[in-house]
Image 1 (cartoon, rainbow, N blue to C red):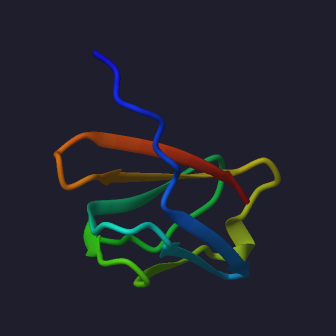
Image 2: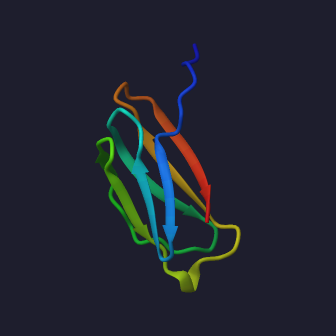
Length: 89
C-alpha cells in the first residue's frame, strides 16, 4: 500500500558554514537528523523534533567540504513513517 503524495516539509537555506532546514510543513516531524555523504565533515546533531516553523541548523567545516557532497535529511511523520530527502551542498 502506498501513501498519497507528500511534499518535503523543509526549506533549505545555506550560508556556509551554516545550513538550515526549516519545517515549512503543517505538522511536527521528529527524529530529524542530517547526514553528509562525500568528503565533508559535519558537526554531529542528535535527532530532534521540529514543530512547524522551527529549524535545525548544522555546521559543515568548510575546510572539509568537497564539491558534490550531499546532505541527507531523515525524519519521521507523526504516523511513524520514515522519510529521506537529499540536498546538494
